Length: 82
Image (cartoon, rainbow, N blue to C red; front, top):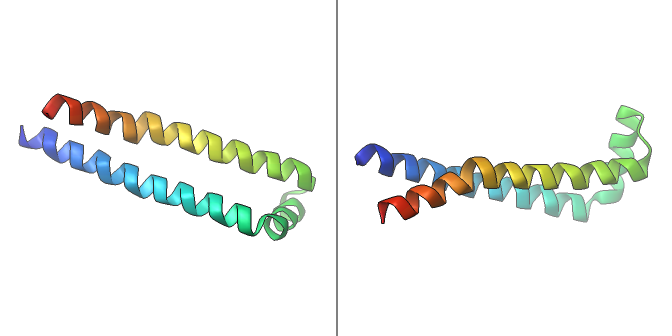
């Protein structure tokens, strides 16, 4: 039983840390979108409007990964152990 509780705590903290990184990335992209878009566009040779679309996809995929690999296992263990 103790192992499952430790696993639940692990997934809980993994969820918190990943959601914090997601929020930080979203805030930085909103605040500094022009400077970052120009910089990354020049670095990778991608037009600026495509870079912004790539940022949106990045945030969406990262959010899905957080739900699948961190938040869902945490919720399942939470329900199982209550």
